Structures are given as C-alpha cells and as structure tokens.
Length: 301
Image 1 (cartoon, rainbow, N blue to C red):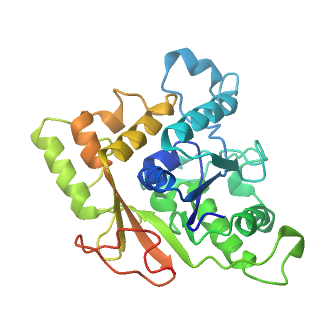
Image 2 (tube, rainbow, N blue to C red):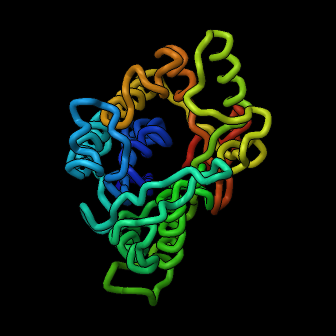
C-alpha cells in the first residue's frame, strides 16, 4: 500500500470537487492513495443546462447516469482513480432538500424509498466498513454533524462515516469485512469565516454579487468559523486549476458563468485556492507559518 492513504466520504457528485478538490489533487499528485466514496448520484439535483433538462427528476428522472459520467471526468482532472459509490451504483438515492420557514435546509416531506436519508444506518455503515478495512486510511474527511449547511444527505454522510469508522476498529465486528482498522485522524470540512467575509467585500468592491445570501456579520457556526479550524490546505496553481476543472466537469450543476465562477476566474482561483478542515479525531500535527496544520497527514508516523 502507499504510505499515505486518504479516504473521503461525500454525499453527491460535485460535493467532492467543491469541498475537497484541492486536497484530492494535491495528494494524488504526491503519490498518496486517494479514495472517494460518494453516497448518492445526485438524482434530485437541479439541472442548469437547458439541453439536459429532460434528465431532471420531474421529467425522465435519468440524471444519475449522467452525473456518474461527470464524476468520472472530475476525478480524471484531480488524478483520482479510486472512486466508488456507497454500496455500489444506485444503492442509495439523493434525498433532495427544501428550505424551511426559517431559511434552514431540511428534508423533503415525501422521500423516495431509496433516499439516503431513510437508509438503515448499520447497513450503510457496513458498506463503508468494508472500504475502510480494505483501504486502511490514516485520514478520513467528511462533513460535520450539521452537514455543513444542513442538507440531509450531508448529515447522513457524517453519521455513516463516523459510525463506520467506529465499527471498523472493532476486532469482533463483521470479521467477514476484513481485519479491523482504526483511522488515526478524522477531519470535517469547514470554511474560514474571516476569509468568507473578506471575499464578500472584495466581490462587493468589484460590483459582483456573492453566490449565496447570508448575513456576513452573523454567519451560522455550522457553515463557517475560525476558532476551531485546525488545517489549511493550499497548493500549487496547477492543483488549483485541477480543482476548478473538476468543478466545471460537473456541468449539469455548475456552469462556467454561474454562481461559483461569477466573481471571475482570477477571484475564483483565490476563493477556491485554500481549503479548511477541523480536526474531529486524532492528534494535531505541527503548525506551519500559516498558523495551521498544512498537511492532513501531519503528526502521523
């Protein structure tokens, strides 16, 4: 096995490129084993390309196979060859989400029988236990307990990832799934509140609207914070470009002239050129000149 092994658990195709594409590109380029597990195929996603609108859930409901090809293209840009779906393709379905009366993300009232939000937690976790015991990662990356912004599939991915990590370490649990493995470090995706505010002010000065609407002086702690950030991953311009290319590969969800690139490519490179993580398990490694860990594997033997 490669000396360094990174496992990422994401809810839908495109989440991985947006949230952790830089880390994936960097570690893949450095020769580490990077394994992505995607929990659903994003069947409920809003189709932003007119010529693909017929694939949407309210028409032909054939978006999943298309998003699978987009995911493969994105992984090619990031240099990641090991990308899997939890339990295999089409095992779990995108649960979709709504915005409730308080403006928070919430589960839909009516859910498809295969919706990930309805998944049996033990069954889903055991699918991931098998991957953990096969790959034996030193680092696991997933969402926080709020799913970062409350999407039910992100919350479920958090639950499945943590339950699986616990079960995988138990010698007596499901020996048929491989030898026990205890993941040394677990990280949660996060965002820097101060950087978000700075980016918003830069965009405002340039006359550009921010992609999301929120009160910059009252950011929800589930979305962005500074106090608990432990790691900042930045990398070469080539890796930043790989991340941006991977995001563009998810063309049904992210358009070149859409929200994610509305600030222009130069500002987009700055915006997406650093990723922040919170250490949820394990010992923090030494911090660099930035004041953060600059390597997810920092402190590991």
